[in-house]
Length: 434
Image 1 (cartoon, rainbow, N blue to C red):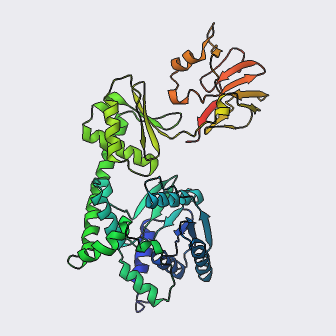
Image 2 (image 1 turned 90 degrees about the vertical axis):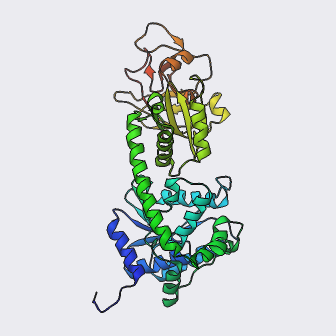
């Protein structure tokens, strides 16, 4: 490009962000049709970048179908591939705003593969609102660090916000200059939503007196450095606490956790949960968990933490996804046929697979009904299955889900714990789709 040809500052921000965070897979754009994503779509198309516009259809507005059609038409006009996904928003998931956000991110993860990057159009004014919202909700350092330019989505996928240093007025100027058309969501006028209240009634007043966007950007960067240090400390503490993979989820040693100060325990748990769920837990839930862990050693706490569950078993703390519910019919007589050669997906999110040397054949698989006895291959006598599951240290929350494998009427294996004298030399593989 000639040095006499000025480069738009928004284009510079976009190309600079992509240089610093190179894309290994496909490039996506979260395209709502609003001002921010419309400007970003035009910037990407003008630079000839191979991007696919992804529209999430929440179905919350009577105009949602029109918005989807508008987005498809605008993407087509710019020669950008377009995809739309309909989602169901659970308003019980932290409220309507949070539920919609969670639904969007689930949609992102659904379409993205390892190495993919999705761009979002958040700008500096959004950062101010996020900072104030989290401040008023009593967030700690990680929360006050607000939105990062880039972050992991899990599975080798990333999110990138290239316009975070731009202002809304810059985006509006760009849109007017290029004759862009965008959607105005009628819900943005509803000040019963906290973010809209701040946007309309608070941040304009602050901005009239202070350079609030510049100040918040500087504060957020400083807090992000502090948050990075806390995350690094949490990683070290997790290793000290013998972080290990479990059949489902992960676990740490409770004695080692107890040796840490309360502040470090909270920091470890907060970072651990966020690394597994993508969201930090509520402070009240962390306090509840620590109180329950300080209770009697034989107590079995079970605390929900942003879609995960924390449980104690045999002096270890487990952090697991919420288990899929089992139908009563599955627990009371459900039977599945297995050929012993391929994977068998079972109710509740687990999979049974053949181990090395496991012979193909006709097998029946079921869950416990109560009163079963079994004899591990190396033993001379049978025992109650209930006692064997305790002895083999199977986590209590999985004991109703362990598959019993029969050949004819003979029990030949109990999950991946053991095979019986009448079964193959080695038990099959039993794992959860974590």
